Image (tube, rainbow, N blue to C red; front, side, top):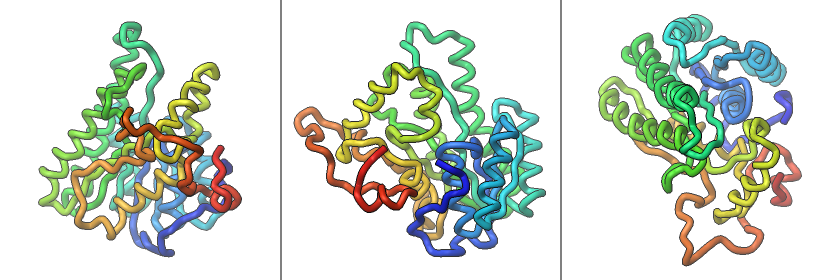
Length: 290
């Protein structure tokens, strides 16, 4: 999907005018889609990630659509990067009202074959990096000014076969979301999470092509009988960051088409009749899927 194409949004114009948002892992995929929507709705955004080229391309796309965006190179596995990245984001935007912890990474592997180095890398990124990024945002700005945080996790409610490392990490973030919501509510901070199911996103391109058919088949185990879209995840994130969710904190919203409630007594059937929410107008109209 081009970074310069227009986006579909159900939210009113200028909803986030005067707000500043940091999106980790913001150069591609779901993170970029969230950043584009927040910028479209008036927020100043910082896209953080490890690859400057991708970040600058994403920023250029948002700028071409009239949004205000900045790039900050930051590896959330490094404490110094987190501290300096948060400080630079606040400097660029003049504050930090909204945080989307989207950065993450994993690789498919049977549990018995996951090496210690690979395990540590996934835990450090998905769990540890998420915690310390949020902690630094709290210390540098949100403790005094309040804010809203959304953590992106995953559908790991029935375990996560072939992804034991990220399943454990994302389950940790689910609990972390509840804990921080309890501890920091007194400071005017709301913290929630979004758990996407199988989403048609650029991240799938990194998997072995032989794995793709299995992913597509698994994506039929929900009531929509398809993969979700980046736009559908971004809409959920945008809602939780918005004033409409001002009475919601400490929850995880599952954006999975009902995959997490799959039951063998009533499996999904047919081609699925639920509409698709996507950026391409024709897809929205005819309900077709990627």
